Image (cartoon, rainbow, N blue to C red; front, side, top):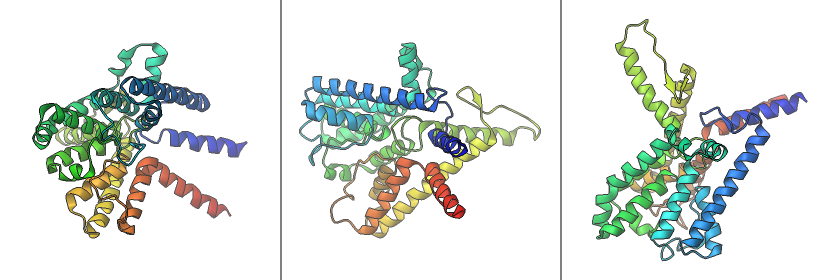
Length: 335
């Protein structure tokens, strides 16, 4: 019985490893059931939206599942090229955004039947803000690159949201992505790095960690200008954060950046330029999957292994991976 309780406790810690402690239910089993219900419901909604937008039922099912899980997998090598239209683009944007919203927020909206809970969530508001700011920032460049206002708007908003939510879909060929302005790539790298909400299917460091990191900088500056014995609360989403929690968030981000730097080192060593290497590694580690063309058949085995490691670390997250390694080592020591 003690072994079961220990396993249950460890599973619970991995459930909350992303930086927030709330569950959908006090009971872990019920929380998992609620997650399944929400996941299936969102997938069905996505299928309906895509089918009504003009997709056949096979593609609608596959693209809905891919968009909700923010994996960006296509049904053919051509992807969305030639398949999409404005209605499909908007539907995929909606589905990717739903996948990037915390499931705890979805649960509250459904339980209370009040969509206002979305606007009570700090992460959701930042998600919308980042989507708008990044889209508007790259809009002039996209209009110039594609030579048309409507096409530029379509490309800017779709790819910004695809990067931010880590949905990973692209409307253009790899040659287009490689030829984008460095400013466009940098903006997309930044939003891929941040990612979606904690407790969502999105990758990245997560918006909650990003906000805590920004707040920690402000708190550090405030601490340095106040008298040494002064005290002030460090609140995030209505609760006081302990110094240990802030330290853990900053350490996680540091580790995340170190893995990115390792990936860039390997890709540039293989002969790729710095800008595309940065884009490719952040895309892999955030599990976005938008490629600048480095990922292709015949790429060096060192690049392939490094990107696999980046994707693995990004999907499982660093803390659970370290916990798994620690658990394996402890089991070996007991033998």
